[in-house]
Image 1 (tube, rainbow, N blue to C red):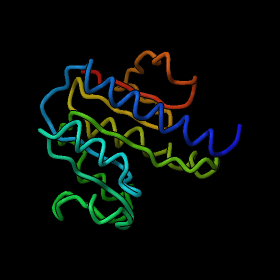
Image 2 (spheres, helix red, strand yellow):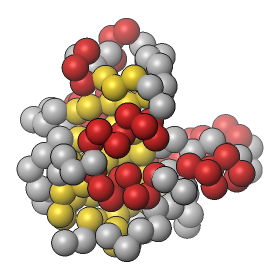
Image 3 (cartoon, rainbow, N blue to C red):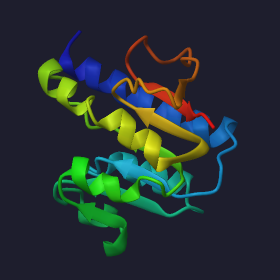
Length: 160
């Protein structure tokens, strides 16, 4: 599969799951956390589809298009592994994390801390959507959508 096709599949899976969460899952009260702002495409989608919630974005540095800039208090700059810890226990309704690199050795390091951080950020019943698998005892993997290829994108509900 070409890298272009792989990218399109990942973006389609991401959109389909986020739309499924919007349309078919009753979320608890709480913020939406975007772990990895990147160029802001997903942040734009979250802002449009979860407009009634505060959306907080994290990244090493701001690199999104200026029209997609979160309010200054809603952009947390710095190493996500460190800055995200400040949001553990904040009972977010939804956490979206798309910080995989496609390099198995780099992603293996991220997977040593990301599942625990995401589980800790979520309210009971909250949803985590991720490009990386989040194996954690407090996260229950949800059924794969028919439009999403096996292993392409994941979503979980936070257990009580």
